[in-house]
Image (cartoon, rainbow, N blue to C red):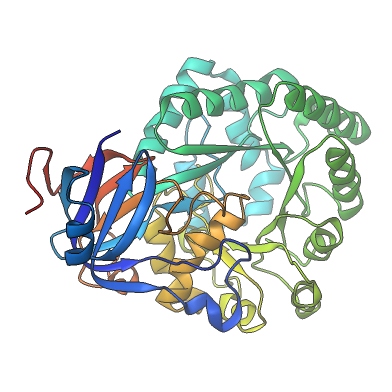
Amino acid sequence: MAGLMIINAAEAVTLGGFSAEPARGPRQSELGIIRDAAVFVRDGKIAAVGASDRLRQEYRAEIDTLLDAEGGVVLPGFVDPHTHLVFAGDRADEWERRMQGAEYLDILRSGGGILSTVKKTRAACEDALHTSARRWANAAITCGTTTLEIKSGYCLDRDGEIKLLNVAQRLRDSLPIEIVSTFLGAHVVPPEFKNDRPGYLDLVLKTAATIRERSLAEFFDVFCEQEAFTLEETEMLCRKAQDLGYRIKLHAEQFSDSGATRLGVRLGALSVDHLEQISDDSIAALKSAEHPPLAVLLPAVAFHLALTTHAPGRQLVDAGIPVALATDMNPGSSFTPSMPMAIAIACRTQGLTVAEALVAATINAAHALDRQDSVGSLEPGKRADIIVCDIPDYRHLAYGFGHNPVRAVIANGQIVRNQGRVDPTASPH
């Protein structure tokens, strides 16, 4: 396979050393920066990262393609560990109501919110959903995402949830990035089960078994919250899902301190996501765990909905809890596929430094998907998922906002986006 070398990088941010355990506490600021750097890729894997002059000399006989970073910053591709990318329609009207002061739970009770998207998504055919989801996945790639989690949860019936995960499978088979699937049948209780909650819990578990048999999802998620699922229901569903072979992720503490974070610790969940209303007791539970769930923060949600309460990123990092970032791309509460935007918001509203946010969006996010051995850092042997950003140093990822800093995207060793200089025939001399 041809050898690709990225040259003339002002910085290569390697984020090395955290494949065994996520970065936490003071170490969440460690970036492993190499200046005046190059990266050499062979057979879809990172072969070397180091000083430009040395690598160009050492690998000169193997270089078939040169990609010029032109003084930009080279990073591992972003890992987005929480999205709801497969859906139909939008909720622009609902968002406008939110901007005028309407409360989300009131909208949900009146048949809006998630249920509004469920109605539209149930009515959409698989091909239409695939076309829409592919558009959003490509937008994420353009913004530098090379590993993308996708949840179901917008049909809430057996065939519909399978339909959504089939779309994710089709994206996995056709796109160059890695797609990771999560079954979120326990998103809310659909209207037809309003008076039969036990019946819907049973349907979720039967659907979960079918999905595992078809290898359509590896993670199981529950929205533990008022108007969704109680703590007791969440625990029952998760324990039975673990018996089926799923690993657990939880929507936790978004609108109230539900206890889902503490449950996640007891269950050995891979991540607890949201945490806008997390209590000191729940933070203490995470801190006391030897291997706590990743705290996946979704800063674009509060921004999109103009909320004043934000997840306490600074407090979590200072407590030694590993923090990750995600977009939560969905049509209701976070209508963005941009990880750079999530980084910029996290630094402004959740107290993270740029270095901490960058770790959270790469290697720690990889841990939140159990992909830390293959992605999330620029280290030899890992998948060559690499981005080149048109910025002079890594801080500009958060210093700037509202534009896309990503110039080039390499996924699995292949250039899938490039707005800079690449020469497939150039001599490295």
